[in-house]
Image (cartoon, rainbow, N blue to C red; front, side, top):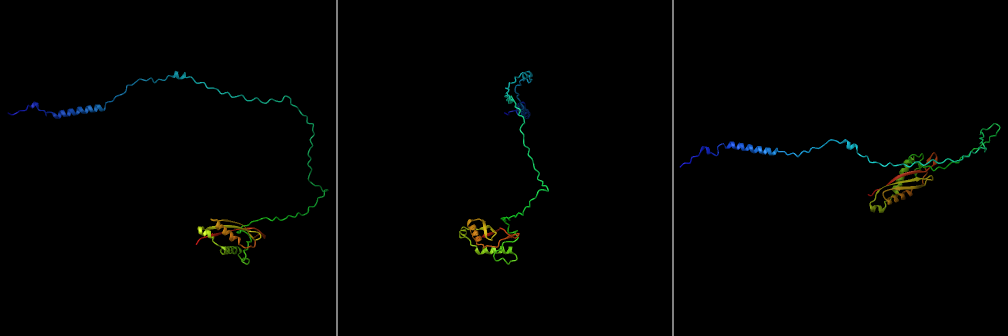
Length: 234
């Protein structure tokens, strides 16, 4: 026996239409849910300004600081005594210093002025007559001869301190001394990197011979002279 389907009982009939209608309904519900807004309850507030309340505001009282009154002026003396000017004042008489023809003028003898021996010091570079080192008397250029003889004297008497060699100390010692007015050497000053090197430089300068003093305008003067002594290890 064959089963026959009723055309009216077909389940798949119009399924596409129903799907579209259902999809549209669901989308509508979703859109409505997303766009749903809820507002708080609005209260009516009175924003008017009560001017009378502000005008009636009480101003706090401030305490006024009272300054003390100024002190009274000093009282005037009751009785003022008037002293009469009866005392005589001697006038000072200024005598004239002009002389008349009748007065004799005393002659003044010549006054001898003693020459003051000024302690002048003239640098070696600008002095007129430089000090003469022994052996430079006949030289035409005494300044160059002086410096050459100084170098010879240092090389001849130079001796490197043993303690400075052991410690590896070397450097330059600047020496300043003064050739006195009698040709002697004095006022020796040194500055160097080590006390032992300074002591050796002092020993060398003390061995300098007496010299012919330098002259400025024909008078013997002190002449300061400076020279470096270099200590270098080989």
